Image (cartoon, rainbow, N blue to C red):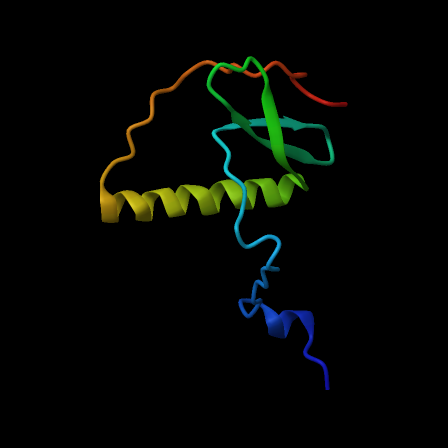
Length: 102
């Protein structure tokens, strides 16, 4: 008998394909949204270039975006407990893009 969705809570295993397991590097990101989704563009800015090349785009629901934010805050907190405070200056956005997609 197949397990119900409720029975699987907390038991999901992530499978990473060989073509994805190396990941992509990003040193810039842009986030836009509309009523139904958040769009995360992860890009790389290379020295001497005035354009950032998008390496990956992730589109998700507002609820999942908020869950992602909470998970990221939790992981940053755990990282800083283990390795010390992350020094990151707050800089104004440098990527040109629409504020919001409608």
